[in-house]
Picture 1 (spheres, rainbow, N blue to C red):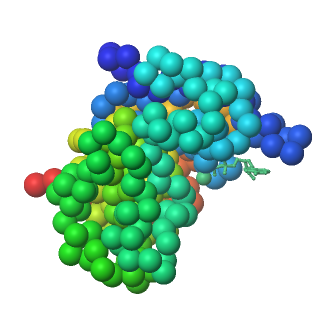
Picture 2 (picture 1 turned 90 degrees about the horizontal axis):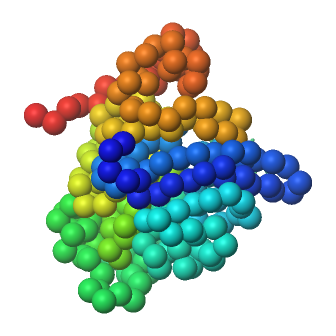
Length: 250
Ligand SMILES: Nc1ncnc2c1ncn2[C@@H]1O[C@H](COP(=O)(O)OP(=O)(O)O)[C@@H](O)[C@H]1O
Ligand SMILES: [Mg+2]
């Protein structure tokens, strides 16, 4: 990474109920494009994101644009411009698309950026009166990511946005993220390596609550031995997932 990182996480530690969940996470999020956070199930990816957001008690250092944020409450972090699309999407199923977006509005100098959201996701404009619970998984993901784009955020964190989606929908969501990342840098927690390969320039890999690797995503994914050692994929039970094809832009 040549430009200074937007988010610099150092020795992040999280202790929940007397159990050390994270014990030394280092992570640099690039100031542009997509940085991927990888690791097997239970490695500590979601806890890292929750630690960055101050949703769990944490120790260590998290610099946002050079300013220390450990010790700040979550609402301050959100106001400083971190948008979060959580693992379960956090959509209000009984509310319309427009209502879900409206609930995410924050007071800001420029007002909510509906222009940007509707330009990136015209489908959300067309479906603004539709109840969010009746949307497809991919469309719900658009709402979750659209919400993070409303408020002029500096960083978007998306936790496994393609999880549980059919391959065709994975492709759609990857396109959504790609477009979002043109506007705002994204920290993407992702298990689908085809999506990582397509979107991410940089990556960090967690194992057992620690950073096991940081570097260029293409270099890691091009190294079959390292990919297998760090992520447990390559040859083996997860191969089919790795081989999911994500169509390239024409
Ligand atoms: N609130 C919690 N209380 C106790 N254990 C937790 C809690 N949250 C996560 N864990 C444990 O911490 C580990 C890391 O979880 P998580 O961060 O969700 O992993 P990932 O997102 O990489 O799958 C897992 O073993 C999980 O069971
Ligand atoms: Mg998780």
